[in-house]
Image 1 (cartoon, helix red, strand yellow):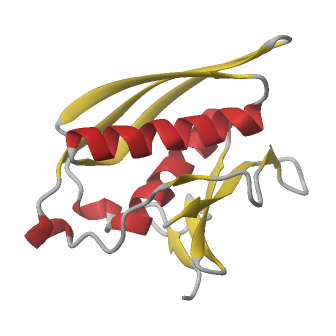
Image 2 (cartoon, rainbow, N blue to C red; image 1 turned 90 degrees about the horizontal axis):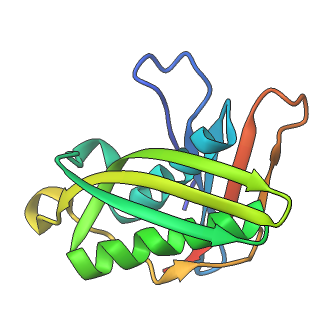
Length: 156
C-alpha cells in the first residue's frame, strides 16, 4: 500500500496526517503546530485506515479522557480509546478537539470526538482497527522544530 496523506482544503499547507505501511499493519502519523493538533490529526489518520474521513459527518460528540506516564503512552491510550468508542458505539469519527496537560508526574488528555454511526453503504469501512501499538511510537518535534509529529502503528 502506498503512503496516503490528508491535506487541508487548500492543499498548499503541509499534510495534516498520513498513513504508512508496516508489514501487515498500518502506521498512522499526525502533524500539527501544537501537540494537540498532532494528536487530533493522528486520530484523523486512524479514521482514514477505516474509511475516508471526508465522508464522516460530525454530529455526535463523544467525550474522551486519558492519563499516561508520558506523551508517547498518551498517544497510544488516546487512539485505543477511540478504537474502543468506535467499536462499542458502532461509530466513526471525523473531527477532534484535543486538550493535553503535560505534568511532571505524567500527561492527561481531554478530548471531544465528533462522528456518526457507521453506514456501510456510505462509509465503505475497509478494515477493523484492533488497537494502537507501541511499534514505531514517537511524539516529537520535526527536524526544524516547527511542527509536532505523533505516530504509531495500529493493528488491523
